[in-house]
Length: 114
Length: 114
Image 1 (tube, rainbow over the protein chains, first blue to last red):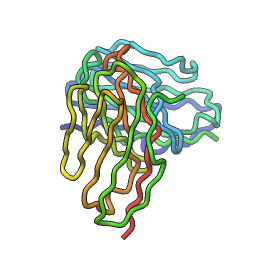
Image 2: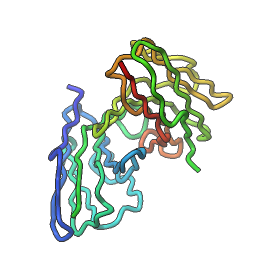
Image 3: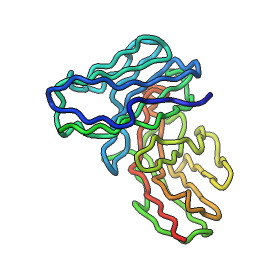
């Protein structure tokens, strides 16, 4: 199984809402990533978890809050977002974060903030 | 300035024809260089991954080349199919963060027409 799953596929939320994005993998990978991608732009790294610990935070605003409850699951909690946060949010995983292992991407969650 | 530049930005070719996409990078040193295919609204899917010591890597109709001296890579697609229509992204591993941080190129949008 080389699949990274993400739910929901689409999400529309207001600026006062609280919502969460979910990412799951069952490949035994110990590194998981959140990316944000705007239209016609490359993905931008947001967070990296290595062995369930946050190892990289790319100065992401606090309205985005990541969580890694276990080695298979990665959440992104959203609160008080702005319309400019509308984007495709991609999750990825790799066997390890410390070596040149392949990153496997999920299909993404299309987020629209109204 | 992006450390990974791709050309052309977009390309339209007839089904069955070959094409070559270019990638120039300034990230140095680097661990590996990858080519990803990304369908619109979906997550990137890996096509090839090469270390700095490899010159060429094939995956079916996709062949990637790497010249670490000139810091150039190319992706050659043979006998294009309609399903090849996608964005192709060149990605270089940031050596300061091992595999955790990827430097994404600007992408080439490829359209195959019947």
